[in-house]
Length: 326
Image (cartoon, rainbow, N blue to C red):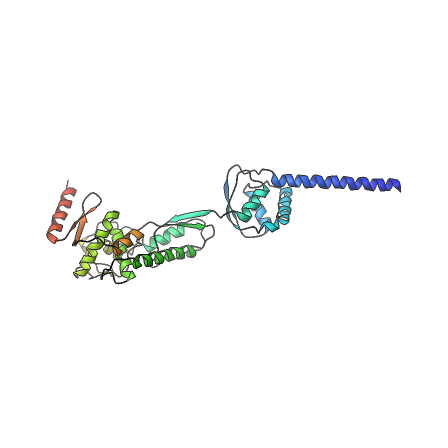
């Protein structure tokens, strides 16, 4: 009997030592540096804990093998009060431990991607940029022309393209409202849509910031006098609906082709915006320059020459053409 008790006691001691050893080994594995050589972004999809562990092992964030997977599972259970694990694209540190990986899964900020919509793009071109942007989901059709604010937007992995487009449209609505509230009192700018249409024309007419208010003034002066706006970009848009460059210089036939946007033929404004104007173009129309200018022509150096009379304009045109003649 005494020998049996001694054997049982020895077994308990052995099991206690073994359990302590396993616990210590598990604790070491929990805190041991991982195999990842550099910081890495990993997409952790929604799914089971097993799927998450497999993703991290496949990406090299934690060591492979069933023992490590078991330690990971136990660690998740023992630390569950620290929060839930998130599905997202997350950045894991170099040589991070299982403990580090769990912290990232619970508290890490999703990786942000960026997409830039340049000023002056058509709705078709904006939709193409969104469709080609990585890690988004779904698809979008071209929005109404001028509906999107050109700027840089952040987004996360898995964001629906439709959601991102809605953000772009909301940004334009908010910006247009803000610019409208602070506008100068100009009778010809009778509503937000008029401001947006003219801003889209200004956006395409000049890339020089200092010229935008002057171009806006020319269009406003012509509207005041009942003159046709005669804006080349409106003709181009009417011919191809913003699909891209026309592919050739405007011809007389182009200028005489009837479209709802051809301001050489139609009085007043074109049927709608011809691109997505940036805030600077919106501000230029809301706060146009002063003056009597009715015409402008390229100066051969990237800018424009402005004129208040047809005679002065013709001289400017002649000077421009003489520069282009070899």
